[in-house]
Image 1: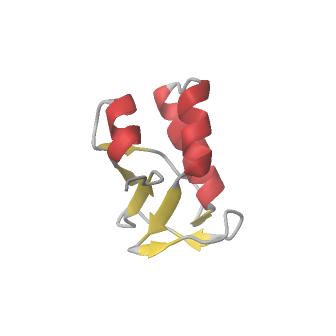
Image 2: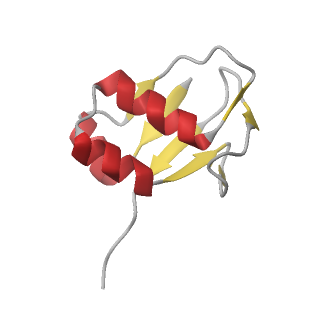
Length: 86
């Protein structure tokens, strides 16, 4: 499954996307964040950032981290870090 990375996460990982494997027909946003962290060998700062990120699945924010979403190879997933500004 292709996961799009934005802003700080993209800078830390050094890529605008990462491919993660999934072997089940459903996945939770928490599992997506964990698999991304494992795939890149995340340090504590990236793990902490991933915990604060929003995850979008097929163009809709996943509001519940433990909700299960149907996924396939064509599912679009995006990790969006918190935004700050003034």
